[in-house]
Image 1: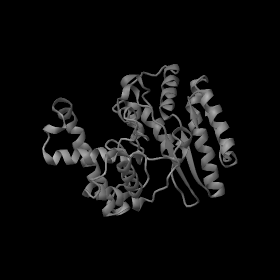
Image 2 (image 1 turned 120 degrees about the vertical axis):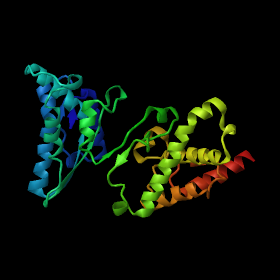
Image 3 (image 1 turned 135 degrees about the horizontal axis):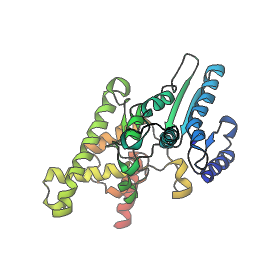
Image 4 (image 1 turned 180 degrees about the vertical axis):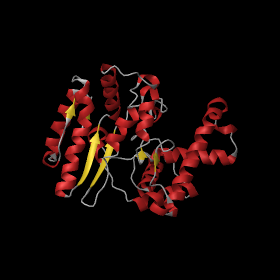
Length: 289
């Protein structure tokens, strides 16, 4: 569903879907930004109705993309103003929570099939307390937050593991080892973030030995999180790499345990597995010898 986005982007997406050969397996619905607010408000519900038909009548499992869910809220605000309703917080419509619930609560599974949704959420002025994104996040099982500071470091995908969340990160779902490694990784990255002001003023050399080691591992983890993706090959020239979850958990556990402290941080950049990082590190050592 294209909700309030540019016509050019919709045309480009349609062309890419035809080139990739998946156009016959999908439905596309657009309410573009040049259209009336009523059309932009209803397009998400229209796309969801199509998904419900395939789920209930044909017993399929559906994946619905909504770009951008903020435009849905924005269109509702415009319609509310046209109807003469008194605005609520930050100028949004008083029915914001109700309208969002009517859309989000229809995204569910039944005995016949399922609907899973992936939604792009624009955050006005990077304010996560804004009523529009805050109301949206309340319905989501997971959120993947993209941060500008990671793009400034040329780390892609620019996903911030400290602010991204998932209800599935539970020992009963992913297992105790996966949970422990994920939380320890977040702890190391958070400590590194807390130390950055000190590093900027005094330098790394003024840190304690334990903090120096933690910073080194955190920087390796940051670069290890930069993965060569299949869809990014046309931009990076690097082949995409598929890595199993078990291998990913094992790799991060080994980094946290210090088994790869001898490798330079550059060895972890844009590699798939820890074995590839080891090979890259050995290759860099030979080149610098």
